[in-house]
Amino acid sequence: PEDRERLEQQMHDMDSHTQFRDAGDWRHLCKDGSLLDVEVHVSPAEVAGVDASLALIHDITPRKQAQLASERRARELRLLAAASLEIIASRDLHTVLRQIAERARQLVDADLIVIRDWPPVADHAPAVGISQSDAAADWRGWIERIEARAERIYAQVVEKLYPVHFNRAQLLNLTGITTPHDPDAASLPFHDMLVLPLMGADAGAAGVLLAFSARMRGFDTDEEALLLQLGHIASVGLENARLHGALQAHMQELEKRVAARTAELDTSNRELDAFAYSVAHDLRAPLRAIHGFADAVLEDYGALVDDAGRDYLKRIVKAAHSMDTLIQDLLAFSRVGRGEMDLQKVRLDEAVAEAVHDLEHEIATRQGRIEVRIPSLTVLAHPATLRQVILNLVSNALKFVAAGMAPAVRIAALARDGQVELRISDNGIGIAPEHQERIFNVFERLHGAESYPGTGIGLSIVKKGLARMRGDIQVESGADGSTFRVILREYKNE
Ligand code: ADP
Image 1: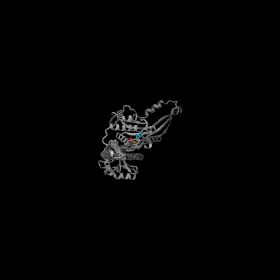
Image 2: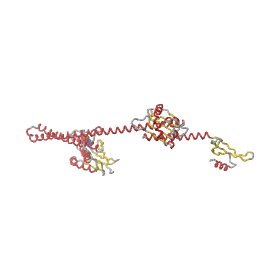
Image 3: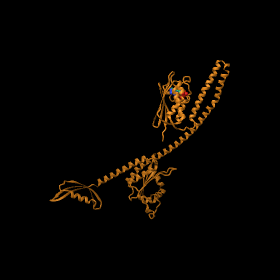
């Protein structure tokens, strides 16, 4: 009936001169009431002087069916591909399970899909993914009844790795309804339950997939095969999510351990610093006595000893003096590592100006030249420590020049990516590449005290101070001088 109008219109439009032509695809009603797909070609004809039509009608049912089947197959493949993408992308076990359940239901037009991990993991609530149609609205009660008795079946399915069907009668039996007269029997919405195994990475069991159908015919072999394919994809997703979860837990554990170790290390470092500080401090008192008494002997009894004796006394005084400098430097070094370091906003040009000011006497005696080019920049730093860092670097730049040469120092700065780089360059004797790392260690010196006086602690203070201000230092050096690059954190008003 739906096609009649279109057919009449087409017959009316046909003119008697048209040659043989394609009249399109139609449906014919068979005597038994079934529909037949046909393709029609028509040509006007004259039969014994009477106008007529010659129609050729082909039965194209097989072609139509093949077309439908291929469309269905394409849709299934699209669904499977989409499922594998989703499942591989998602990290959370519950999301993975829910997505698989949703996809499985679309794929085979099921009424209820339940996916759960199996065997259950100790100390973990079972991970479950569910998707249901309206027909399975009260699924919860049925699943509880089934699960109460299904352990053995799950175990069997995951052990043998093959799917098992339950028809309605078997399902009723499984839910504990033994007679068809049981009033509950009529309310079971399902006619078929398919239990499929999901595999883990080591070919062991990862879970089960339960598919329920409310259709009389249940699931056919094609649908079973589709569910199996989806099951394989699901297994990969499940395993991924598990591994990801395990990795996450492992990482958290590691982070916790690192934090605990760091705290321990911090404490012992502090203790060590405090110890070094008090030892250095206590050493100064006897040293002052040695220095003072040697000086007194020299002054009050100098005339009673000969030249050699006086020379010895002078050496004692000098040695005591340099030891005192050493201890003071050590105390300064230890102080940089101790106590809280409050980082605050510091104007870099001001810090540099102060350090240069402190060095004025040294600059004058060495006839040095200092060129400062610092734009207006603010850094996050500890003011006193930053000043000490700059002071030590500039005083080295003034000190380590070849004899007879006037020191020329350039100080510049630039901001980049949230950091500020302060550069201190000199025209000094340079540092050989193999020594450039070790000069930052305590007591490390490349020259004798006669040519260049010092204690070898200045750069250690620089390094430690910068580390505590979350900065860094690098050195580049050649025959025409060295450049120390200090990295600081830019202060941003946020
Ligand atoms: P000190 O200056 O007391 O010797 P430092 O820790 O400041 O100790 O420096 C360690 C060593 O690094 C110096 O003895 C020197 O050999 C080398 N050094 C530091 N700065 C420079 C520089 N600007 N040019 C050449 N050598 C340097």
